[in-house]
Image (tube, rainbow, N blue to C red; front, side, top):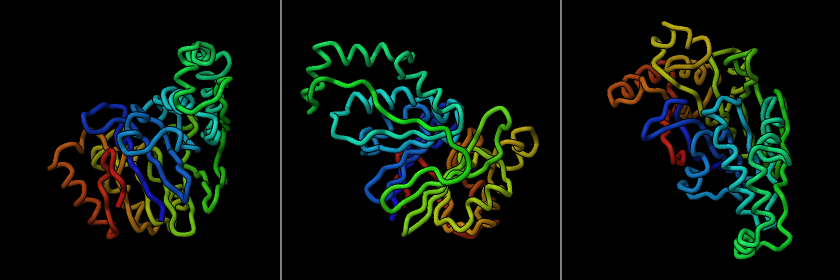
Length: 285
């Protein structure tokens, strides 16, 4: 059975208990990370995982609350690398390739960091102490722009990308579906309720679904044209036949206990499956 770790369950607005988006799905022996929002690398370690365990990273889109920890994660994973681990593979909508290259490529903004660590005796010594062998190599990873369809596969799993409606045409956005022999997990990313995403999520065991506000708040302003609230999240789960709905990407309107209880009542009035309120550093039961 897949294990799901919630690292980030928030929005661009920082709160003490949540900020930005990131999730890890363990599929067999592989750890797949989805999005890399604020402080993801630190949260990953707090959750009991380690950067070099992550061999695959999938970005839903390139809003900063979903990708701003990318330079930290890429550099930390490389810095802790001893040469025995697998090469990291990064996937996301365009311009993911350009962003990764611009961060840690030969002329990337952080190339001054890794070039110094490759060449300086102090950093070489630290690398040897971690189990590496000289010469120390520059960062090596693959980044690929992707769209809807099959993205990649591993031993006993595959990842598909699906359509969502968020802020087109200004930015490409995707959802993801992880399929294993035991279960299927869908990560919505940011989206409004739309038929394309409902079809893509259909029949999944677990859905990590954006739920940013009470629906009436969203419907009263332009936010509702780009994001999902309480009752739309419930309708998506019901229409797609989801077994377990995990609510993530919660906004400020849902921070109080009273507001949260009201949100859950709204959802459960429409969707009768299992509902989990996603919290950071939670392993989904």
